[in-house]
Image: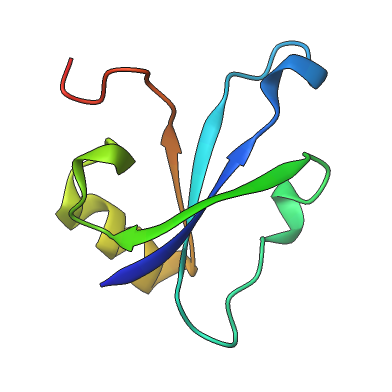
Length: 80
């Protein structure tokens, strides 16, 4: 599954850790209302199985199918 990935700006949001937001590569994809208060920066387009995303592929794809998006905590070393 191809996804568009956005990164939150944690430095501007005290108490919020950097997060990756994966949205399906589809015309109807949108940042959910509950997350629109955060500032998001486009990061990349990749396959949901890409290690850079840092989340288990099945969980990311399941969340996208169920909720229309998947939040993944950002880690500098996704294999750690």
